[in-house]
Image 1 (cartoon, rainbow, N blue to C red):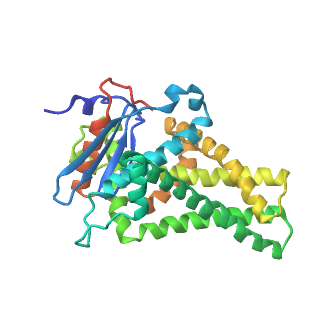
Image 2: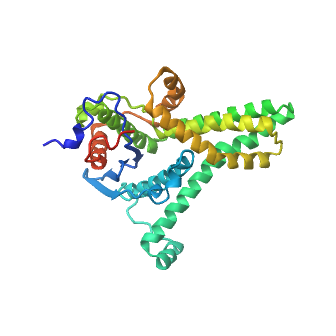
Image 3: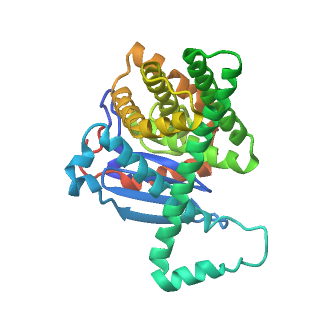
Length: 327
């Protein structure tokens, strides 16, 4: 018997759901308005499922749900939950070695001090901090340092801003292209495609079947790839405007200025994504086109077993009440 929740957006023109997800190692994480589900395909073909109720911090502190502020809060929350889900999926990945790796002395000491649950939270937070730090270093610090080379040719602040902007985009696109060519990432990106196709099928009001999902496009305008590109694009606009008024030559001070502007940039990017997600006009299509093109690097066509994972994950987080997940 078909789950009644599969049919709830039927006949709704332009329905857009707030449900979304993330590709994992042989799995998919989906988040709905009240629940999160992780579904992983184990080596024996069975599905491992993890479900949890969402406790949103903005419900306790409403100010964190205000425009601009909520973008930074949701970004950090998504990073934490994404890393947690990724670590969970990695537990079921087939290992090439025969012996399980022994935990380090530090891991043993930390678990004794904090307990297994708090120790896991510690490593998750550490992974998030390192991930954010690497992204800032790669997409903000490196272009700033490399951009100083332009000062050998000219003192123009405009030329330096343009050089840094070009380097940001070049490094970002090159990074995605490199990842897309890694054998280990291709299956993850195929699960990414399955996630997008499943969301599209649901938003179209079609029953969530493998056949219906397979026919959907794999490029989704509310994808994390598009959001990251928007962060890069808006950082270029904001930093160019700021440095035109407040010219900074020193590379280290310029980087600190980029860092100080980052929360505002993330907040603006989040609000833009919300706006773009609600509109389908010609202007919106032009603005989201670069992010959709970049998804050629981060999404691939999934096989049927991946689509099954996406369907199961979405079904687990759909709300009981019709329209509760409308974007």
